[in-house]
Length: 150
Ligand SMILES: [Zn+2]
Ligand SMILES: [Zn+2]
Image (cartoon, rainbow, N blue to C red; front, side, top):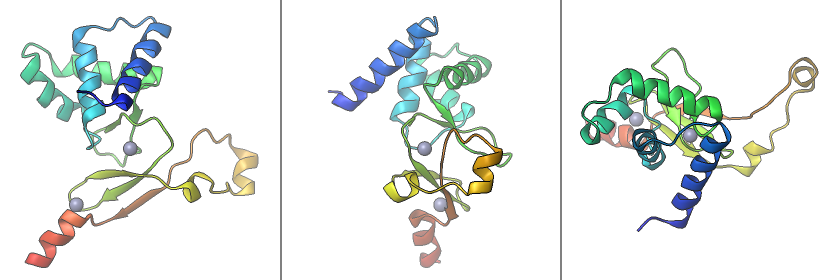
């Protein structure tokens, strides 16, 4: 059985697609569900590798284009990147990221303090800030455990 929050997420997806006149095909729905159940902020290729088990004839291009469309209509986000393949994020609520430098894992975390961080005044005068996200970088616990076993 699906959790209530999953149902809400699905409703949000359906409603947003309808608002943007995007037809909810079985493939699009499957891509969204896969992404929203993933905790890994997968790349388009990651999504493609999993989705083709269910839809063997789907192409990488279709998956990539679908994900970009999803981000355009605002049902998924794109993770701030550093030249790696683009990574996608189903979590559209305010949250922050921990990037592991070793394995590349991106972990969501929540912090009211970070949500309320003040924007430096000179920046606020120059730019319009639409979104605030704190990105921490380091070594995740999985990698740390591996390291200590060496
Ligand atoms: Zn790691
Ligand atoms: Zn995230």
